Structures are given as structure tokens and as C-alpha cells.
Image (cartoon, rainbow, N blue to C red; front, side, top):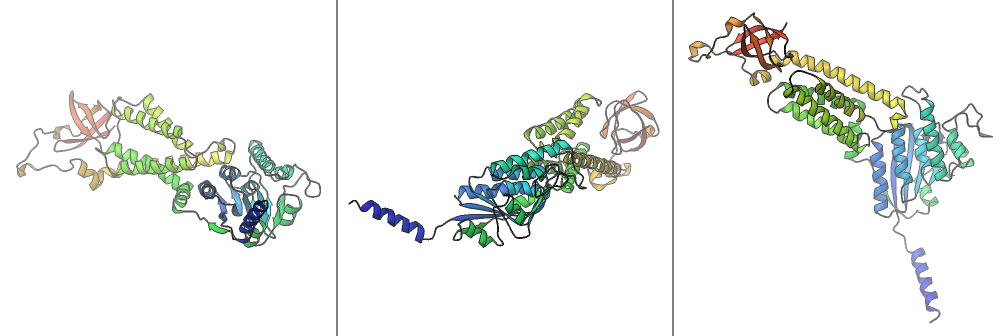
Length: 438
């Protein structure tokens, strides 16, 4: 009986050592430009690995860097992972890629790879302000401290003033080769293949689950492209203008709503836009509609509405981090300004051409009915042609004007004319009186 526990323990040992283990290793790729669209993919890899009790996550890294706010989101996801992580640096982990690599529990580099050069720069490669560098130094230092690596070398990847004896003086940024990274305690080992990494981690018999970016994450990355977000903002603004100009609800308003949902929806997923940003835009639209359709003239409600709409769109382009990285703020300002200029051009073009299109003419009476057809209007207004008068209401494009002391329902050629403006009757078609501003 005394031998029974020993026999049972021996049996368990044989079972766990002889029989193959059903370990799961998740494999993700962090390649190319580091952008905000990559963060949801990395978060999904970590989430699925945790949910399926994986023994390891391997991130294959090959990047020259990218957005620091995106790298920070990715770093947070990896650092908070309940599953052990390995950064397998294939060729390079430069700039933001260094921060991501440092966040993993272990770093494995292929022969001839490199890691470092993490100074924050703009699109032209110009070094950003000290505030941005200070933030990045802190991120690199704290991440290295958390994963048990040399904090001075991590900081020296950002700041050339950090001197490491035997490596760099006070005038050089730190960028390490594979051997140097291993010798200075940044990399854990140098291996050439994924199989060697699996053997090194004790997962040679594990099931490899490789996750690629899915269609939803690809769509989010596509929408987050500056060109696409600029187009969406144009559709939002031009669609709203056309919907206000035409009666009822139609295609322009629907297109504007879809563009609005895509713009703020993708921004919310990527942690660019918050609920507050969305509410700012909605309140701005409400104030503008109130100004146009309820309150006569154009005053404080209209101005406030436009300001809130612009603020909502702008905040939807930037996260909290660009308060540090001025490069992203500048890009957002240029993007928003460009969208407004192009939208203004498009609106001007539509205002001039829309009244001449078949769609517009289907919405309003554009042809008079001849008397010989048996139908005539109850009143003749041809005597008004050439008369000058005053707009009693805003003409959007329809409204009311005063001529020779009498009120008439009038319409413009698509132009918006403010109340109390001087107008002239251009033509009369049946009961339709067409006016222009003087």
C-alpha cells in the first residue's frame, strides 16, 4: 500500500512525458507600416490565444516603424497578455517596432537583424519636439523594465545623449545587430527559423495556429487611410448640403449618413473617436438645422453648429496621443482643411449646375403649361420680370419676397439668399417666379 502513491506518481510522469501534448502556439505577423488598423488584429491574436489556453504567442516582426500611438496600443495588448509572448525579429524592428518587440517576454532575432532607432520623427524624417521624445523615452524605459531588460539601452534607442560604454558615445542613437542585442541583454537568443524558435521555447510538438488579418480588420485599415477619411468627410458635408437644398429625404442624405457611420465607426474601433466626439458632431448638426429651418436669419446657433461639427470631425481624426506627437496634429489639420476646401468647391459647382439637371427639375416645376392646352394658372406674373424687391425670408432656394408692396412665393436657381437681401425677378414660368440676388 505504501508503494501505491509512488506507482501512481510514476504513471502520471510517464503520461506527461511520453504522450504528446496538445499545446497551442499562436503565430501573428507585425509587418510593414505600424498603423492604427494593425492594433485590432494584434488584440484579436492575444484574445484568442487567451481564450484557447495557448502556451505561447509568437509575433514575427519586420517593420521600419510607424505611428507611435498605434505602437502604444499594440504594446499594451502584448504586455497585458496572460499568455507568454516571443518577438521573432525577422530582419528588423526599427522605431515603433522596437517598442513592440520590447513588450514581449522574450526577443529572438534572426542572424543579421537589427533593433533600435526609436526617435520620434515626422513624415519627412525630422526629429519631433522634446515633449514627444520624453514620452517615448519613458515608454521604452518602462517597457524594458517590465520585461527585465536594460533600461539605459532602451532609452538610448530614443535619445542619442545616452552613452553606453563599449557601444555608443553621446552623439549616436542605439541600433543593435542580432549579436549586439544578445550581448547587451536585449535579445535572448539568435535563431534562424520558426522551428528553432519552437524548439527553444519547448513547443516543438505544439499545434501552430497562424492568424492573418481578416476582412473586417482590412476594411478598418482601408477606411483609416487619410485619403479615404478625407473622401468620407467630403461626402458627409456635400451630402448634407444637397439634402438641405432638396425637399424630402433622398440619396444625398443617405450617403451622408453612411459616410458618417463609417468615419466615426472606424474611428471608435481604432480608439480615435470617442462618444464625446460623436455627440459634438450630432449637437452641431442639430444646431445648424435649427438655425436653417426654425430661427430666421443666420446667427449664433448656426455659427456654434458649424464649430461643433468641425470640432467633432477633427477629434475623430486624432487620438489623445497626438497632444504629444505634433506631427499627427498637423496631419489632421491639413486633412480637415483640405476636405473643407474640396467640399466648398464641390458645393459651389453643385449650386451652379444642380438647377439645370433633370433630377432637380423633377423636384420643381420647370416648364410652363401653354394656355392652348386648356390649363392656365390662376394668376399671371409676367409683369414682375425685371422688378427689384426684397427677400422677406431666407430663400433656400424657395421662400417669400416683396415686390411693389405685395408678397410673392419665389425660388432661386439653387443659390441660398439671406432674408432682407435685395433681389431681382429674372423670369416667370407659369406660377414660378425665379429671382437672383442683386
